[in-house]
Image 1 (spheres, helix red, strand yellow):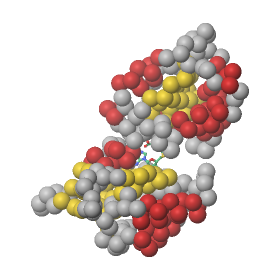
Image 2 (spheres, helix red, strand yellow):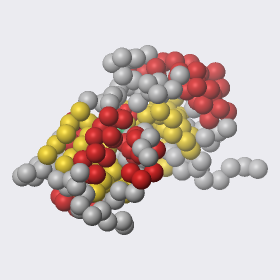
Image 3 (cartoon, helix red, strand yellow):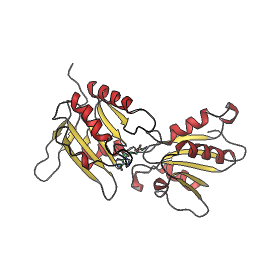
Image 4 (cartoon, protein in one colour):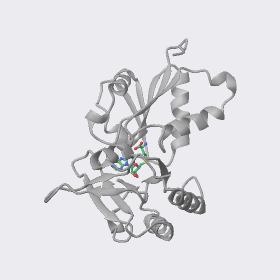
Amino acid sequence: MSRQMNGGWLRVVGVGPGPARWLTPEVAEILAEATDLVGYAPYLARCPERDGQIRHGSDNRVELDRANHALDLAEAGRRVAVVSGGDPGVFAMAAAVMEALAARPVERRGLDLTVHPGVSAMQAAAARLGAPLGGDFCAINLSDNLKPWDVVEKRLAAAAEAEFAIALYNPASKARPTRIFDAFEVLRRVKAPETVVVFARAVGRPDEKVTIATLATADLALVDMATCVLIGNSDTRLIERGEGREPWVWSPRSVEG
Ligand code: SAH
């Protein structure tokens, strides 16, 4: 790890999908050593309070400003943690920090910067269900803040045709509540009606709700911003566990040749 003369550093961390026990010990140490926390306010709220530590909370849409602010603070000698939910490399702040860094001259890119993994929502969701992402899978961000919607539709159709299981992040928002409906229209054109679909909402939090359905029967009104949606491939199946128990969801590792 490089050292900066003035002791400043920048750590890009993920605090997991919710509960403290899904935050890695490494990230907990970084949060304890940081002088400054930078991030979307609800994620900062998941970090234990510390005397003298400064929190720079922001709303969700200003990732690049936030990344630049964090880089400036680290350059000035502060010990800065940039905080994402889940994993910082999955639709989160690591890419924003890289974007901000790439826009700076090379002489300013050598600061003491590291990225630290966290449990991503799709992993937490998959663990609840058994092995819905047990074969090849991909993750698609349904937010069209940073890419045109027709790119999202193309990728969805291609992933579905290629028989990936799919994890959908940011499936709905207040600004665009109908995104998930549009996405399902694309998927229904390509996949069979009985394709397994899971809505994993607020996994690991007190209001967790996991719903198993099919592409044809899924009630899209259940989907909100706290939901990770998993779409099976044509091999994904349910394993019944007997009365009163939800079935497991299994995407086999093997594919018939
Ligand atoms: N970096 C994060 C994802 C940020 S995008 C990660 O790796 O998990 C935010 C999206 O993540 C939400 O819209 C939702 O789709 C998903 N998400 C985050 N926490 C979740 C949770 N506890 N349960 C289900 N989905 C979650």
